[in-house]
Image (tube, rainbow over all chains, first blue to last red; front, side, top):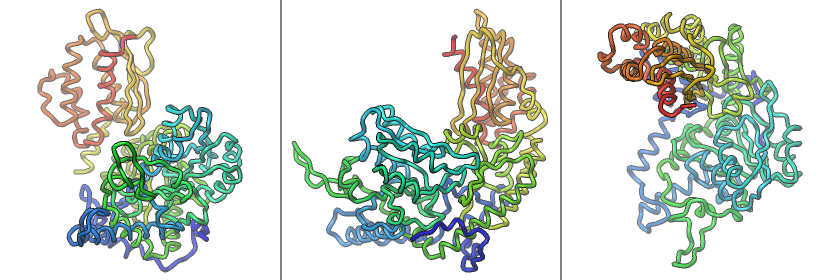
Length: 419
Length: 148
């Protein structure tokens, strides 16, 4: 059972050494504009440890060929690595079966796959999709497609002022017409961790499946898709210290059996004739074409890397950083933190009086501090909080309190320049 | 050096324009109008124009929300475009685009160049050039496609 780790703020766990882990990431020792890099944008994309880069290179240099095609030695070796990676993802998410893991090019493609293959074939005008206002565009736009093209109705669940999700409001939004609840496990802007298990229990009580966007959460917390009983769970490799171009969709076997193919091409067929075609079973059915093989091996290495740590200790470390940063910015009465939900993940979004996020980010950048500024692909949420953009610092296992101090010093400096 | 680049970018003239934008608001009976949008940051600007029959900018206003650079640039633009002929305005815009990209802007008449030079610091910040050019591109859209 994966009890949420987000309640362990302040708990002393000695078994994670961030300084030591930091040394695994070569890029963190570089400078920008002559200042040490302070990377606080892992929520957009995490840096890659040496072992991931080395493994990808070693694999490409010693075992690489196309997968599932040849009978030759290298093809077999590469296929073994590719399928071993699937089992690594299975274990990472605690899926019951390896064929419930579909490799995609990222979280976006994973959600689009559900939209095109699961929902689109059966959706009727007036059918409803329930989603929260804090979804990333990747968990909004695929559903807009169904609204535009098939007459689906999007039902939005608001968040409270602190950014927490109102489970009763969500429950009330689920009706006899609801075909899917699509909700984030952790907001990329607010850091809010949603009560996913409870959401799923409520939705299932009404016979409605749930898709969870796990792109932010999977790196911060242990995910157990069986304990959650989630129907679909999307993750992306590059936020998990892995490479870009690779992600995964977990889907329950029963759903996969009912889903039609998405992309058509090689590897996803059983038999192709002039006048008929039969398709391979999942996962191959949903993995047309040559996959990003090297990246898949890189993803597996990244998951092994992450799993080599005491995950509870990593979570406690990240929460310590968040709590410290939250406390430090209290001194700035011109700064407003957006998202203070209890148990939230290690993301700090804020807006500053008289300072636009882009101006702030430019000044921080010249101090070596990388933060994200903008709407974070979450314009519905921006509208909810009546802002056009925010600045966001997101913390990873390799960040330290010194990084927070650099952020705070940069904020003071920006205030000096801009006001 | 870093600090110099920042100081040049956020110099007083620019901060003043961004805090107290000139010609801010909408224009009744605008002959042309366009909305500009920067998808990177979500910034929006609307440019309203009154063009004479011969294309001269007899009045111009803007409104919108954005960073200091985009607001200052829009404010300066309205200041400088008012009263210009279509040809002068186009030349000014081309010169401005060259200037913020760090390219040769010697085509600009000298007093225009002197006024616009405060925006030259942006060329050191390539990620921000779009902020500076948003209003100008919107102005051009208004002229070309925004007849009301």
